Image 1 (cartoon, helix red, strand yellow):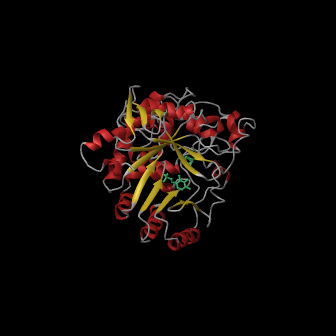
Image 2 (image 1 turned 90 degrees about the horizontal axis):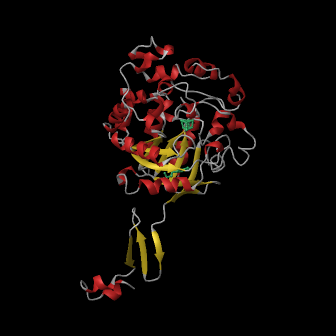
Image 3 (image 1 turned 90 degrees about the vertical axis):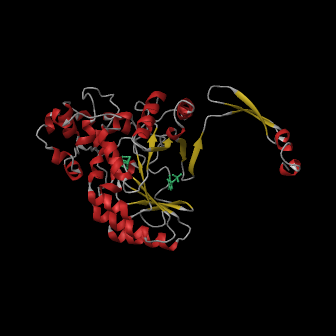
Length: 392
Ligand SMILES: *Cc1c(COP(=O)(O)O)cnc(C)c1O
Ligand code: SF4
């Protein structure tokens, strides 16, 4: 975990006069976000005008907090800067030719605008297309092309009606954009309506605010809403150990105090986290602040994002490296989301070396092998008379 200095933002000229009271207010962070290349260029002391043509297609934006985590503004390879700053590769027709704006047919598999119903028991609820940081690798990069706006109350009511009528839906995944950029009254309206539906067991909120604006969780109003709505789980999106700060730790503590578990999904990103040591550090840091690593995703084939892709085997290599080396709690499931809306598929290193009808030979993380009989008569015979029946 990264410990930030006292008044760490004051060393950046842009915010040298910003008070603690302002900086630690999530609304100040959103109101003062840098929404253009000029703004970001001014803070990092670089002329970014050659990236204008990218910004015209895919907008830019960052909170002051997230930008302040960049250790050295002159280092354009910094993993946080790379998630904020556009690159010409985003609009390179050759690199992006294989991509799609909606690879998972979220809009097509949509019974009501804003909902995607892919699995029988879960539904995705897109509450807004606004984000306080526009991540260059976003799998919903199509929202960058739209005007920033939350859905209307009328939209939400139609979405609730659909969920109410479909009793096989057990879980609602609230996503966006970023739903926690919404004001508390709107979040409360959404959560209370969903919480009241008897057949809903779980509500999952997908948010990046914990990474880019952790002060969101210093807001007593939001914490009270989480406390009241006891079906909620929170899923964050950390991609690099530099993002896991002591401010995040305080925020997680606040969230956990409301009885809300916190999970994380990481995207495997070329040039940002695609090596085993970085992912190891990230997973260790997350567990240290009590966030459970849930998924490590292979980067989706979204147009504007393809330059971040690694070979698919990279993720398997990373999981192989983690297994046995770090706590099982810290190992996420590596998964690929199949294009066309066919769902997520987990990928694992192969631990079976050989397999016949009688036995399986496993290897462990160090490469030691063990032979297991599929039906272990020797052991069972010593314990029960009818062992053969058990093994039929
Ligand atoms: C990822 C996703 C889910 C949730 O999948 P889990 O494996 O339960 O995390 C549900 N619906 C859609 C449309 C999704 O993309
Ligand atoms: S916060 Fe999430 S939805 Fe918003 S740009 Fe980043 S990855 Fe995309």
